[in-house]
Length: 206
Image (tube, rainbow, N blue to C red):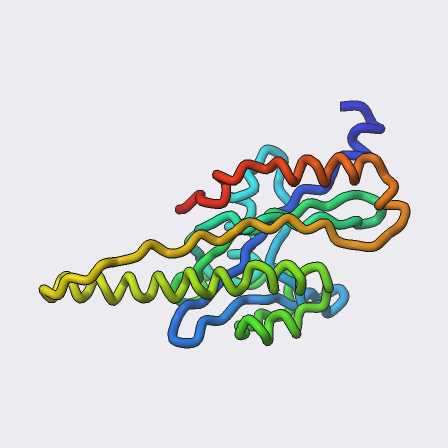
């Protein structure tokens, strides 16, 4: 890859919308030390690392929780210091208690309702993304809880029809109103590339 191509290559990152299930599901957001902003847990890919693996690693480092990884939720694209950053997100479920110290760059973690999480997030594009995917995640979580109850009922001799959890539609959001970015042919090409992402990736489950 030439120096000019490297300069134009997007920054690749991945993260999770992490749900702590229960009668009142809660979503994780993290506070960064450097600017005190509240953000969704995420981080850059290592060279050669798969985005899904990077998302799980980053969530462990930033929330302290092991997670199960579920449906692909979509991607966010925005400008960072003149370069395009693409962040892919997966639906995740927190497993038990924290098992890992928070990464140095993270000051705190909050577990909030969907509305509280949207209101607390600092960056507008993350608010919009969570507002789009959040309701479907909560619906899927409620269905998963019903399925657990159904399985218990079957074990106890009462048969009930179990419905599968609804699919969470993937959302691909290009953020920012930078006029120069809108004129950039690379950004236009990126919009087309994101629009062609395979729908099968939505259904990848752990």
